[in-house]
Length: 256
Image (cartoon, rainbow, N blue to C red; front, side, top):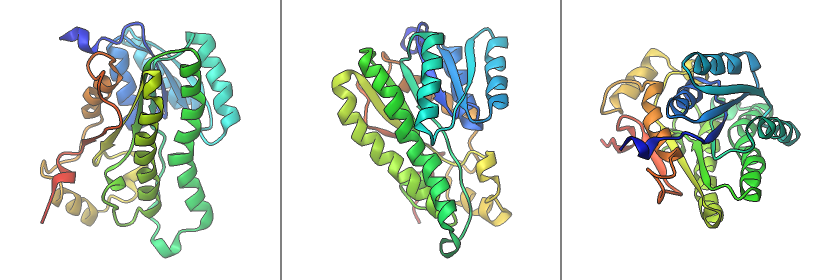
């Protein structure tokens, strides 16, 4: 059974792997034997995640890139390729948010959120998946979506729209990349407190979230690891592509 989830010999690139959710997932991949490239705009936090993995006996290296710049992504892809030779797993976990009411959303705020959450994943996949195809590397792409992508949440309009786009892109690319042996899936996390959503977690908001989450608690980032490892493994999830997988404590099942 352990062999199903063994990632030894695999290389994973994690965009946003220095974030709260991204770092938990890349540490999980490293624990299963993958060497991981942690890519973030903040090199200091990326280096800390890499250090944690190395201190735990894993293989990792931090890289800096701007996900909304294709030139930056091409440059970091060159650096990672020189370090690893290529990659088999791509985790797309960049993210930003804002609680601005709909009529108050400024154009530059809309552009920023859409750029990071959706355009960033498009550009990253263009750069990294293209090289996987050119090298004839079969593998797995894991996009990080949100519960707001399927049931739009109040106060996060732009974020919800961007994540809905991630879902659509995931299913589109699953079809496009299947002939190349590349699977594309998305994880839909529920509520996992992180820096990008703490500003919208007022007491009344928390009460509302708990009231709509059957498990009546927030998720722990570690609870995303099992799903990420499963999707990364070409043995455990070899026939899984185009799927949106909820890890949300039942939030998507709640009815009134």
